[in-house]
Length: 123
View 1 (cartoon, one colour):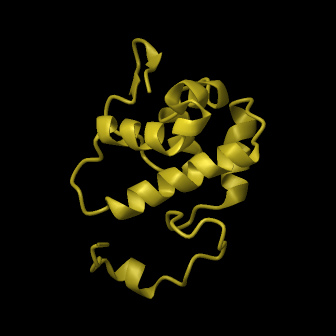
View 2 (cartoon, rainbow, N blue to C red):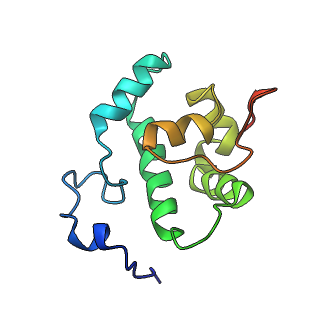
């Protein structure tokens, strides 16, 4: 069950302007994601957008948690894209890390330790 938020900004916010991204964070646009992708030399396909939607959905349904678990998010993406090859497949789409790089595109803060400044992206 989705938790009801008492954040006044969410209560007065208009419904998502893009029905393709119903769980997009406030202020996020598809154009923002395309701009980020260009900066990271990514050519977005429909599968990239599916990952963005999956992440936004996951975050929306876990927004009342204090911390988003990297492991749980990792498992959720692996399960969602299991038929295509799971996370191994997602690494081919997001060479900068399927969680760290796709969170940037989705307008979300990547979970703690999704990227390590000494190694680069680890998830």
